[in-house]
Length: 306
Image: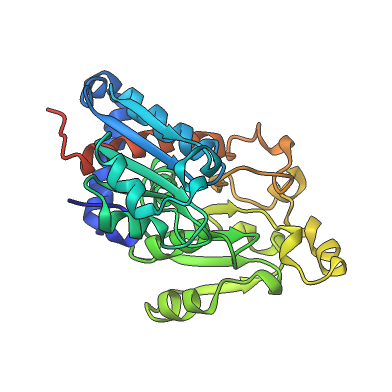
């Protein structure tokens, strides 16, 4: 039985295969509309989520399957002290596949060890978010036509942002990648990403504090939030917070073929005036998330379209 806990659980070939299926789903949705009839997806969300949970539910429903689960730990037996191991054993009696989000790093991995059904990590603390990574890869492929020889800018909270860590790991396996890491010094990428991924693989990257000078270099700009609570003092936050708000003025520095992505939710790091720019792709990114999760569910259930 296969699970998806870490983006690196999938080979590059498997990711390319998922992307191909997702692209076919977009073009031929009727071909996939009944493939999961009689199947059930359990969504075990121990912390709040809107996009990820609804995206999984939409994916399963689009495949003709059904969904059961909970959207908060308060409404589950976890509130009574039930262990993850016991919960997943029970859920394995009810469902065919499970998507789990948990605030504790490693919780989905524990569930996978005791599960009788495939487990998908839908986010575990600040650790991994593999289906967001797959969404990002599909989006980049759709927009740019390739996943190699690209310059990707990652902006905002690069220290704690799990989507950033997962994306660097995944994209680093493709040839000719370059990264521009845009963040305040306090929120730079963790040293293990710098050493074990970028340096270890000889991948060119630069770390900068300002967005405008590097925008003309980028094929993709991936925005994340700079969060007040991550700073040691208010003065540093006030000094830097407006530096990482993408607006129409900053978009003038970007190339016509530079696309803007964001894992959402946003707060104020992308001005709403950017939404009408054809290079703003974050809402298309949400739709692609449904397609890639449909492809992943089919893969883990070993169901194939004719």
